[in-house]
Length: 379
Image (cartoon, rainbow, N blue to C red; front, top):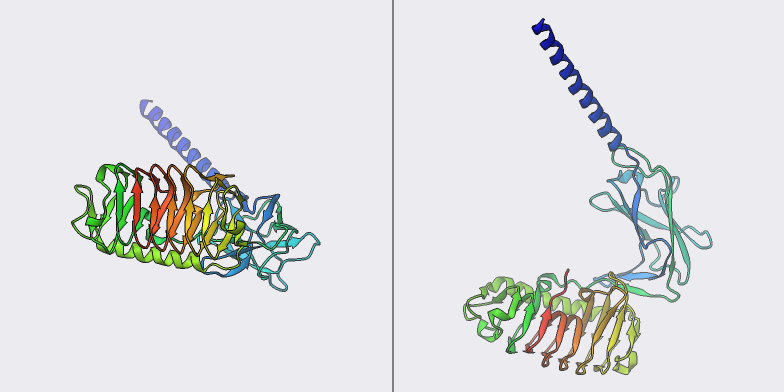
């Protein structure tokens, strides 16, 4: 009898395990076949003032390309492009109902689809509707449960949005120079500091002043005990700094030239490319208003001077990592002024007493500090 009861219990336990396994397998199977969904679009639905075109870091202008992000990997073969005789999955029409010719491509994860219009720009002040049809299917063959549409409206004038300037390894530095760094003690630096090809003896910040980050030098003459000698890394970073300067200086199709006749104090400046043939002065606080993905590039042939106690103010979620000041001559940030953005200076960047910088100081000659706070922006 006891043997029979033990056998019965073992069989009951085995059946419970089997049923649990089947249920788990069924749940896994159902989860695997959950219909894919679009979880994010760019531009967002009902967005306004969308740029008609984008200017890439290689100065190639193409129309704004909407994207759709899916909740799971998709079958690329079902996210088709505009082809005769084939039902389309990702389409776009303008407010008059005209189809926008273009091609569609998936990213390497097969979760983001991009519709690239054939034309180099969209029509200004025009509504567009993008659609993902139920022909779109996930990697396991499950189709979208229902179509997804979203709309946006372009800016009322031809407008080219700029791609960020690629800083390369120079983007790992708060301060990077070719000919050294002088300092009136004490400054507070959050981020890496370096100079090349000049000897480390020309890097005159002290270890306690670099609150977070590393002081890189080309030789053992740098600040002790914290300096790190890495001439190879510095050579690469200096090269990347020069490449970034050239990129910023070479961007074309400016939104405005000679804005404010070089006097931008008191202005509110929207994202875009701005060009001056001479000096630029910030005599009063200036506001840069835009979103976290917007880019500003300022091409300044002459000097950039910021008056004492003035501020560069960011509004609307603008980020300093996306603001690039390419300056062909010297830069002077006045006493107790506050500056935002990445400075790409061809010559000296002088930061006066008590001024603060939320950005990067990348100089092809020297940087001078006087009891300053310099904080590199988050990437």
